[in-house]
Length: 207
Image 1 (tube, rainbow, N blue to C red):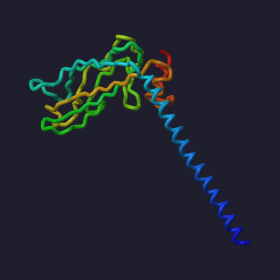
Image 2 (image 1 turned 60 degrees about the horizontal axis):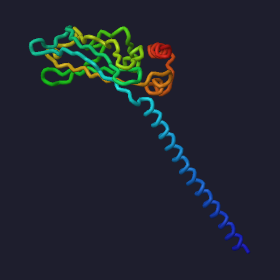
Image 3 (image 1 turned 180 degrees about the vertical axis):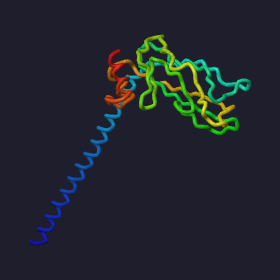
């Protein structure tokens, strides 16, 4: 009698574990399906936001030469603007990264605001995230006002910068003009409530 009760108890326990494992497997499978659906939906939204946007960087740069080498305190013409070659109006932000190599090939420090300065255009603002934001909407075939027109090497850098080679890397990011799209694409959907980014957000919301 006791053996029969033990076998019955064991059978019930096995059935319980089988049921639990089945639920667990279904739960894991369901989680994977939901996760995949979310990723798929996000991907479609992102593609929609940036579809058919074509922004072209326009720049004129007169680099230092052997006859006119780079020297501390000297300015060099470099005009940068963004042109909309698509049919869709967009907002744009730009990342500017200087790269300086000494005459012997050594990579030198080149930070904007320290070793390098630019004459920032009045229609642009530098956000706390390091990007320069254009405070306007760029329509079809339109071009932004210049981000800057010249680059200056600080006059207090050491002699290693004399005769160095300087490159200015410019990367633009465009997003379809709208109230929400740029927040999603650039700030992960958050709304800045302090600092320069708040000023930028307020300006773009009122366009």
